[in-house]
Image 1 (cartoon, rainbow, N blue to C red):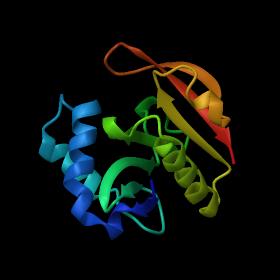
Image 2: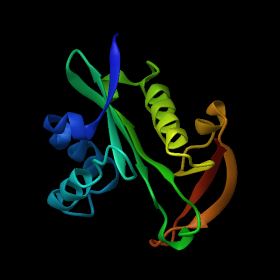
Image 3: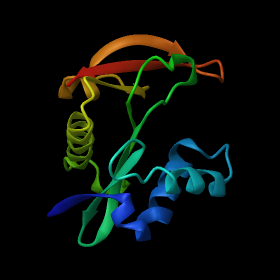
Length: 151
């Protein structure tokens, strides 16, 4: 499978797909229009926030973003890899790893020394060199894991 990773700014026709994925996966407590509006404004090409899309056979199959913050109570940590998502039919094919590597390369090009991410997954990101940093409370009373990566 031939996969290209592009900035969403260069493939705005993928905006609704990406927004729907993020809304269904993480934002169903918010209106779809709110998520779409946020995604639409995460399309910088020379600074964060940036959103990238994996394309195969001219169809979007996954996405990842770079944000300045993904956890309000940790404004001291930045930037963050966020919203890594791969369409269900394309999982376990290395798409997530490719998206992640692309986001890391972009952060490196921008001169950042570290990256952070939040996840409830244990074992996935460690395979790619991410180090568990701490358990952090979320606004809903649940907890999430913070990981860091030295660039």
